[in-house]
Image (cartoon, rainbow, N blue to C red):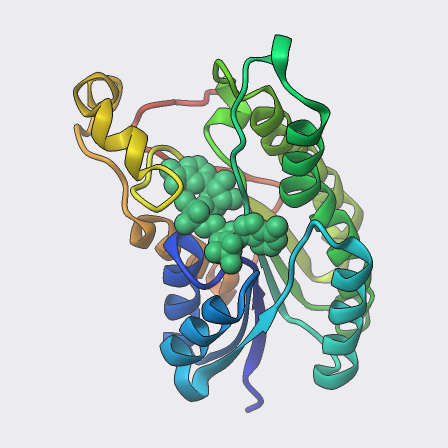
Length: 245
Ligand code: NAP
């Protein structure tokens, strides 16, 4: 049987790296993205013959679209799309420069619109697709200094739920995973400097790991989740219990 193909954005480190390994171990061919050649080489080394690394920077949308179109031409279709890449660029709103707002919205949110538009026709044709979007607990709770990040992450929730409804009858599921505090390069500074304060807010009394997220993404990528769509799965050690999910 032909291997399924997954596109995982931000696959060179942190959560995206673990997701890529988890999918590759489930016999899925992984195309992982990074913004630097060093990152691409890390992906190649990590995946070996189970996938490839490609260079994409979401701040360059014209080139991003070109690369995704090329991928589709080469592989014919993407079965699983994991939108994981994301950044923070914190500032209180009152002094937030336009560039910080635009940068976070472009990388975290607008990118999914552009990429999905190119990928989804092939999923529709095949009547199969899994789209998994990495949002954040902050998209539901908000956070001081993160109007840009929170807006991008709640934007992803609205985007994914709407798209889930649009393609539900076409064999395509669209779900989100919203991590709480996970130790990665993005968070390690704040998580070590404010450990006592943050751990107090987590009922399980520990930070999450990229692996905690990867397991859920793997499930949502599989046949086992075929009747789940439009859902936002919180993975946060009980820190935020969303009664409305
Ligand atoms: P990370 O270690 O900083 O990794 C971020 C990834 O995004 C990297 O692979 C990075 O590639 C990629 N990326 C950054 N800028 C990009 C751009 N302009 N274009 C394309 N890709 C870009 O962060 P992480 O903690 O693993 O985060 C992964 C996802 O989980 C993010 O969406 C984040 O918002 C979300 N999340 C994380 C936490 C947490 O506690 N860590 C909590 C909630 C949600 P390069 O290295 O090549 O720049």
